[in-house]
Image (cartoon, rainbow, N blue to C red; front, side):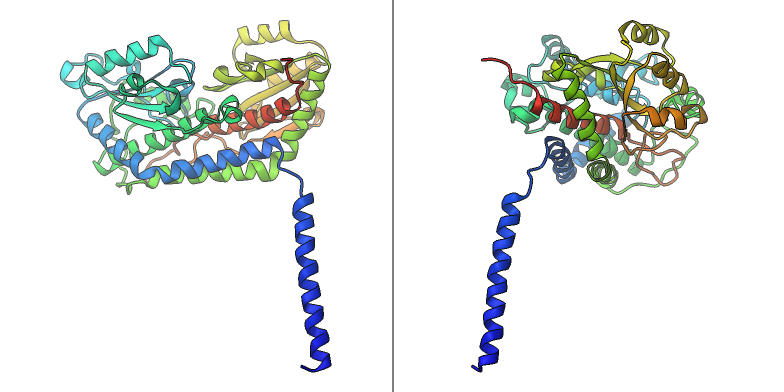
Length: 428
């Protein structure tokens, strides 16, 4: 080998060794993921888990669709678990979800044996829920359960014709409602496959529009309690698995964008809340949403969060807030679609320091003024759009299946993960 080639080869080897050493050093010094980022990554992985389960979800959805066609009604039950509230009376959901929302006023036993129920199981199922499921099971109801399989007794699991185990037994994720997140993703993916199976039978069930959309009330009046399936809309058959996949893909995209665009603001919100906690003060979390009352301030987050439901058109909620509000106090508004100008004025009037998380609202009265936006300490865009629905079905005039419950939960728990990681540990 010539001397020149030897020098070149030696230089290449030296650079390679130096490069490997630099990579090792970079890996050793790379900062660990923050608790908020870890939680969002878990949520993204949860989407992957549910997507892998779509063939089974499709099969169960087809069983439910056949029962629907035979005159069955679908309901939901859960105690201490938000699933029933999340899927009932919900933007983007099936309009006749809930035994009290049937289009049938008088139901025969021959139809009731085709009923179905979604059951949300917590770590310790309530006796009344188990009793209710036993009664439903005795009359032929098809029971689909969601929850932590490891925490349930064999006799509880035996109540379910199908059970979707969230598989969460890690204490950190349990404290951050990781199992609930997977349960809800599974439930909406199953709803999507139920609807998809109906389209293959030539039927389309009425679906809800968000009540904040101007056409929402008239749409509900047209269909609620009046017909099982549309007689005015023709929807082509949708392939098995397609609607669940579209839903999960849309949720995953929202979560990826939350991590990419809002992580810094999630951590800033956590800084502010942690600062309040260090001063011995809790943060008032003003929430709106079907699941929020089940988790805001109800677990370990109770050390820093005082939860209170706040709907802009509810005088009782406004009065309650006026009594709770302390001038200059920190308020975290876990919102829905936009912030109504009356609420913005109320926060300004009472001198609150506001962290705001919300989705889009295109109506003028729900737009933030420049002055109010500048007064916000943190503004977190949860990414979902007006209408609170992410899946389009050919021939259907509205989008279906909502993202807000999932994204609200992840937003809150990402902040919760940060705050709890910094909170003083209780004395042993």
